[in-house]
Picture 1 (cartoon, rainbow, N blue to C red):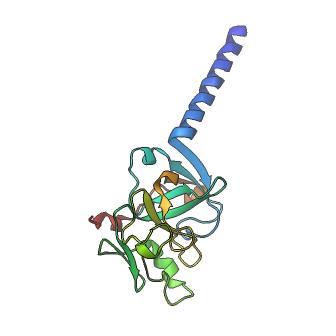
Picture 2 (cartoon, rainbow, N blue to C red):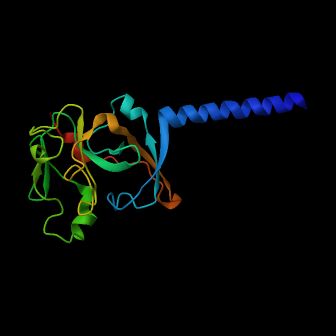
Picture 3 (cartoon, one colour):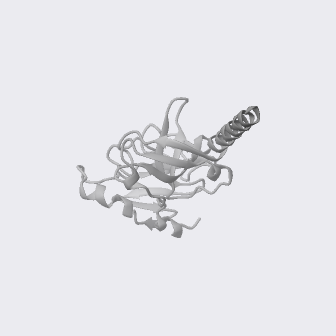
Length: 194
């Protein structure tokens, strides 16, 4: 009986250590808060974040990332511009390094917009933390919410975010179960050249 109790205790301790390592270094769960990524993500949906992506530098344009803004708040947004990119919004169209990028994930929001443009014109040098640079500076990312009319993102006071603040990229939506999915990357960003 004593041997069996010892085995149970050891099994539980091993499971707790494995859970701690996985949660701390590999993956984490987050709850979406707000409508800034609607319709891609809705308020209260739960996602799993791949933390390894930050360590292996495998985060790319079009990925949806979670990042810290301070010690209490994390945001979820789409990565649009990486260090060295010129990013411009002109006549409601996105251009990265001079190439037009079709944003298919904005179809529903474009159809239901309340303003003339879904995304107002801007260039990198107009953004907070750009320090007048025309390209996204080293160590920074440009992020936008899919629900552009309500999103607090790089166009507003949030500005360009620090690469070091990124927790990871969204790997899975796990709640609600009927919306379970794993594919959020936008293929149209693949054609961007530096």
